[in-house]
Image 1 (spheres, rainbow, N blue to C red):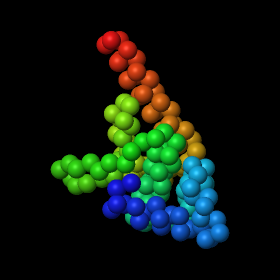
Image 2 (cartoon, rainbow, N blue to C red):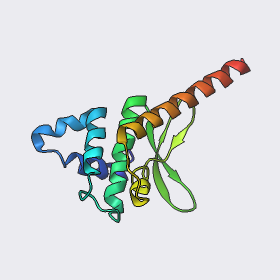
Image 3 (cartoon, rainbow, N blue to C red):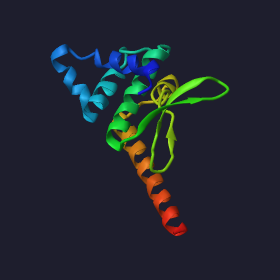
Length: 136
């Protein structure tokens, strides 16, 4: 993960008691901590930095599950962490995946959101394979 955001994931990991921090190492553990921290009253809607930390953790789970790589994307607005799929070239901007939904007052099913992300990447990979096989 790009170093400027690595503290975000470490901060989320810190919500576990030391004897349970190993649970963060699994995809399931990451998703569970995100869902737990989205319990009303844990993080307020205006605590953008904390909510974006959950987006980084969500990205860590996707990267771990799908073998995605963290990159930094520079544009006219600034720098943002993103995930890139080497196979399809797909770039996912996960920083605000959680925060924008919380700020909009949405109920978030973290596992459902994760499964949707996995499905999207897998579909994009298949489209890329299909397009590549048609070229050959």
